[in-house]
Length: 604
Image 1 (cartoon, rainbow, N blue to C red):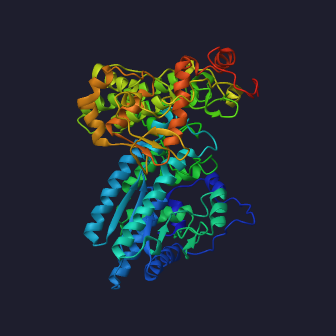
Image 2: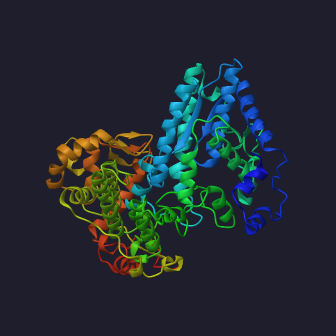
Image 3: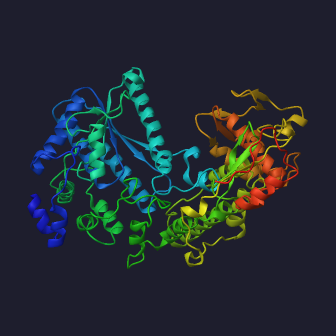
């Protein structure tokens, strides 16, 4: 079926054609695709991939599950299949997939099924395909960081979520792939020649076109897109248009192109996300609309970088109600977005003390103790009610919002920042899952409209007193010291702290968490400690050996816990959401000493 036939099949109206084929004003750095037939583009893409194998390079396919990466993957499989038929000893195709843990659950389930389908095809075809899943650890866990008081939701141009949930995990997993290939080949990782196949296209958008040109991406040559990185990238469908992708999918569905999958479910996913429209019509209709800021086809259910999660809303509007189970997730996202600029939802106390003046900034930081506590209650309620609903339907839970391990990580962060009494998060988990407690998402109509202007207040106030640098005010376990069994170490900054387990990631041992909840929880909740501050939970879990801190961050934990213990001693936790109350308390309190040379209160 030719491209003109395809256009007739999808019944484009005059407006659609005008939108699609209107003259485009190109800038000097815009890539203009050569005119070639569909068959020529397919043959060229396959030949480019085969050439990489013949150069002795290993292939790594970046796979998201979307239409472009799915087509690119099958082109790679086709290239390997042809080489194998020609008698070439083909390498393993390494498939790298990112699971953010907060992806639209429909897409998560789809990708899980697709990975199993790819594994099945690998076995039947005799082609070695190995899947690698890149997921954020606790350091990059979006919900843990946000509810734990470490960060806020991403808005606008803020790309921290994309970096922590996708870019960094993918970078780590590619290092693992390189090490795996090196071990197979008996060489050093730095000597491995591998090329990443990505499904980017010049015609996706003007911004994508410009960035691809800047990186030097090519459909025929593997290029080093980052100087001196050693990472080669090939973009086999870079010069394809969207209709080429649709036509390829059509050929697969018509069984005219051999594929690892029939692409029927792929088309259905796009139809569901597009409100029931065929994927081609949906694409034409949305060409002038704003794209998802991270280029995701549907996005994470937590995403607040867009004003509305249109794909989720389209699914929820389905007449048969088959996606109604997703509604609580979308309600949570909308509530989070509505409160993001609410000054009362923010913690206004800074986390870095000016060591020369003893002052601290009053400015919008992460979310406030009360707001984060309410967010945890909501996601726990969403999770337990999904378990109940799935059980009643006789199906597996359709999503996993938060686990016990994440809850304990939140307890650790609340202790680190002085947010809540020890084990508040795990008490909430117990109340929701075992005692029927529920936390409902408020109606959006009850929430005033907030904007960036509502969180512009800034101040600098006295903070440190004589106890601030006391020996046990930071990462020191007073209970262990009193018992004569504290093991200490000196940090790079020269501070004496309790020795802790460290590694390449902030982490909680999964088995240790389960054992803690089953055997140690009741004792932990009722114990009496010399240290009754929020930080006591940090010392307790570190003492169990359940917690691993990122290597070299002991000084940072020590510094932040000094701030949190200081705010605990002076009873600031109840007013952390109120910048004016903090200024009044800290600028006039007799408990806070005025350090020599300290700056006076300055409002921005």
